[in-house]
Image (cartoon, rainbow, N blue to C red; front, top):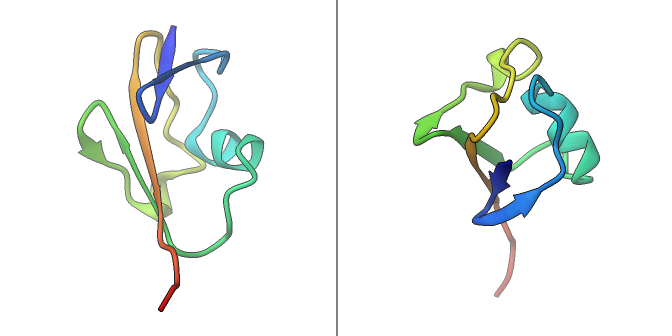
Length: 65
């Protein structure tokens, strides 16, 4: 099972980072992703597949005051 931000997820192994972000309705900007502790460059999101048992962290910038 894949973990996203510490929670079990029904993400299918082999899903790309881009596909995951679309499924999470993540914004187009202000997002960082790490898979198994390694930051994934935005330019690699379409080509980076998420393996079985992967730990994925998705961080979204938030504006506030």
